[in-house]
View 1 (tube, rainbow, N blue to C red):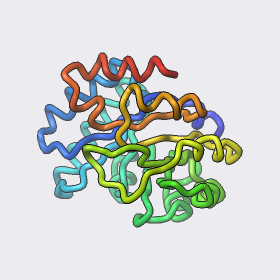
View 2 (spheres, rainbow, N blue to C red; view 1 turned 180 degrees about the vertical axis):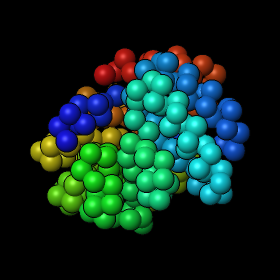
View 3 (tube, one colour; view 1 turned 45 degrees about the vertical axis):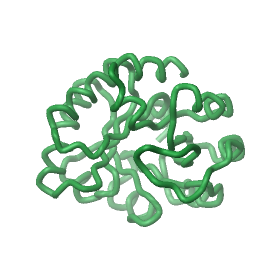
View 4 (tube, one colour; view 1 turned 180 degrees about the horizontal axis):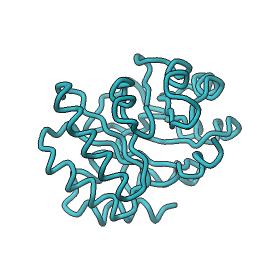
Length: 207
């Protein structure tokens, strides 16, 4: 598990709900060329056939760049593709069940929102990383609360890589990186930029 954690550092890109697979792949590749360290496939409105097609294509792309592909929510899809890992939220399968299903070598990430105890519980259940947020208003996801910066410092003792998410821009993520966050998760600040490669490179340079 230690070796796996060493790869969990830098820019963590999360895909938008794009039905255009060619566009999704093209922009993801630009982000990988710019230095994105990890990719999460998340498409909340896709049908199962489309989800399988897009995730398989992204996995092939990530293999090319030797970066991990994480599947959001869908354990069955992660298993069917033999993807690198699964990200679970508060209403999905729990961390212990995901770890049991996927085995010890896969990445299992957990959304912990603004809750350090949830992060401790996730770590005890076998999580590979813990994600906090949202910190800022997001163009993509609606959060019911604002997470405080200091949770990043408070969670240092848990011993897992920390991801920050929610309205991240190159400027507003800096206080969180300074507090020790190992990864910054972004959607719009890369996927919706005119030059996704340059945007990714600027985030990657923070690490």
